[in-house]
Length: 259
Image (cartoon, rainbow, N blue to C red; front, side, top):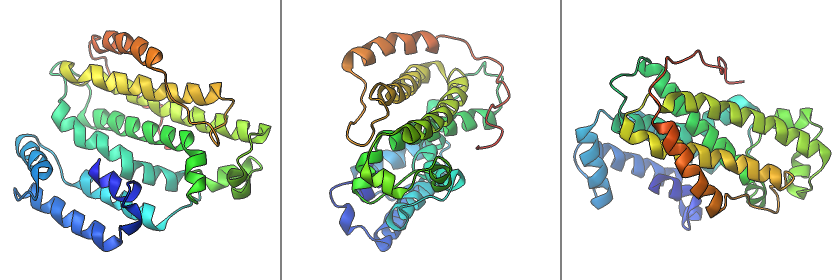
């Protein structure tokens, strides 16, 4: 959270590449048992108790570096890499703490891939929700080649008008994001029992943001989609019920490639 705030928070305009380098050095210190403050100490304690690797944390910082210098993405391969850096890494950080169910028959690799898929799905959802907000900051987190294929351009994004071309483009983006949610859901029941409910709740609630954008007729320029408290409340029992299911044999990924 603090790493993300470096480039998205109130002091983002003052953050430089050298500041991120200092942040990375501080990360290395806390992994070596030399925390700077109480938050560092909490993380340092955690990494001493669980088999957490430092690389996803460093990769997240690389994602912040991208945000300092990059405001356009040529294709989904580029966007995927960004999504991995800023969100997919969270899943890789979390699995060692959440734990894997003793009865799980899935390989560690497939479980980590599912966690990665949830991070990608969540970040794609963030991007689709925040198109208008990002555009006002001069940023477009959408594949440029797919915009062109849909008959759209940067000008259309900055103008912020919902047209049939925009709806068609959004439908394809939603289809991709939902595929990643499906991939992620297959791995939740491989986690330890205590970890499943919050992960399922996160997955179900984030996926509903896509439904809300659709309900707004794909207007993610002037309307910010959100899930109501009532819908959130209704999702929690569903998530809990899903969390009680036993791990299943992990099926082959439907995302054999990122496209």
